[in-house]
Length: 250
Image (tube, rainbow, N blue to C red):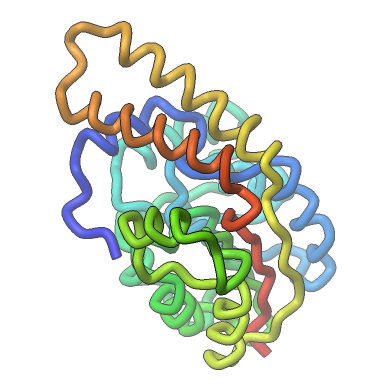
């Protein structure tokens, strides 16, 4: 779990078009694939929505969606984008933790969350989502996992630094099933998706910060950490990455 998130981290990701690995193409395809399992006018929430990359995809498909995030500037950016696209009537925002949204029990047909549940823990998030998801409702959630239990020592060492509790994909499915969810689908984000939608925009943000003499020491620390993350992923992406799960509450 992430507590006391440094301001510099928010400052960095406010400059990004999305705040975690993902793909608009994948989001759109998954929604189309499972849309028939939702009612004609579904009510949804995008948990840890950031500035709303996925939220807007849901709204473009006619889904009424609440973007939930702890960071007010992200939500302001989302509202601005929604209004620009004429999607304002479909998009609400809620500044809160995804564990304490205040949304009513069994009030949602769909919960979406891309690359955000690591901030509270995969299992904690799925437990909280269960209460507010209607019976028959869908959960689309992506998180970072090891693809296998046995990985090279240097990969394990790095993840011991980043997140010693990282789970395997198999672990995640067991957790979901133990909590009562029905497994429908799992799909990896390909390295190309990381590059196109996340790393390339990140490299432009890094370049702008490095060229700015007024950038804070904290922001420069974030730049160095993200450069390291990019390099490490490119060298080791056969061992870990983001996996999208589509789950259903029976």
